[in-house]
Length: 411
Image 1 (tube, helix red, strand yellow):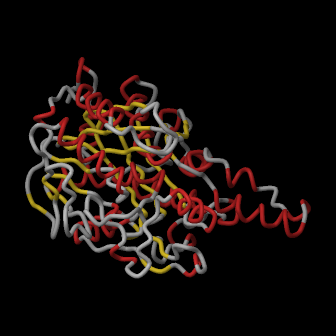
Image 2 (image 1 turned 90 degrees about the horizontal axis):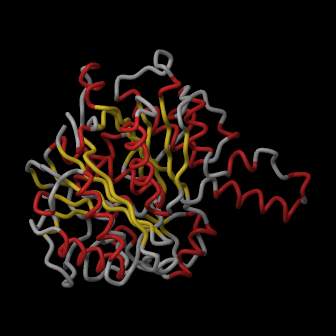
Image 3 (image 1 turned 120 degrees about the vertical axis):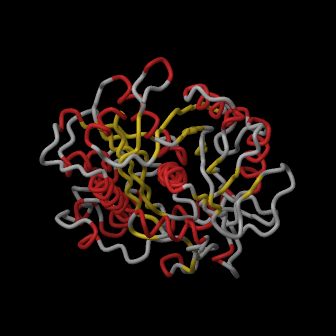
């Protein structure tokens, strides 16, 4: 139960998920394993160039986050609170009994409460400053998901927010691992959240060329690593992991989903939106993650890819996986089911990778019909694949050239 250099191993003992595939860990896992896409026409995007998205079905804050004053927090924070509560309960923890001084919270987000900001800007323009809510900043600021989780669950350790675009959730988990290794906390709630399915975000992403324009077939629009991919589907969601040192988890006799064996981060230092053409930053993050896990490229037998379904990202990521990992690991991409949950994606996919290790089951890549030909990958498609996973990587990359890679092995 020790990692490189005698450091205590960090393990995942709780998982909370709120995604378009379902509210809760079990619903999400079941639908992702079934490979059933969630993209559908979105009435709130009527009249937009792309009028479909992946929203969370039937999310009712009164039911899923009881006791929270909904009017005080943005939707992205509500999603994070729901995921955090599930993760804590799943880990067999009771916040009333823990030493809150030793509990850290690290949550990533691309845009924070962007829906609140859009709504209040409309109020200002239409009605003047007198009708702008005094809660605008407390609802919008990107750190508020972490802050509200800390308030809700009485966590008084380091409480941090990460902003590395679509790598934010994975970056948060990596930082939480370092906090645990350093002794700065004994428990960490780490993950990501975003609720960017808004008209402004949809328009902006459309203008960048990032969104799929397959308006005649929304459910088939997100198709990671498919030769016919043309962009991602905008989505919302949240994922939170409970992390703790392995000896503490053993002492509590709690289930361990997986060990978070290593993590690596890098920057492309290349372009504000486009990845490095040769994947230099992605490769560096993957190699750093392996070094942190004291593992070799040949040890990796599974990759949960970033797999956005954009032509450039998937091509570059595929060539990097083939170049770096000599053992030809299985590769899957969850965004075919969930769409792109932005800053939450890295956390949701980290949770799915931990579940892949735990259940010895690899979910398929939805909508994969004709694999890209830029690299020879063992792409999982058609149905879930049974088989032990000894070492898995979860890749996350974001605008600005941010890269974060997490390594998981059986606990």
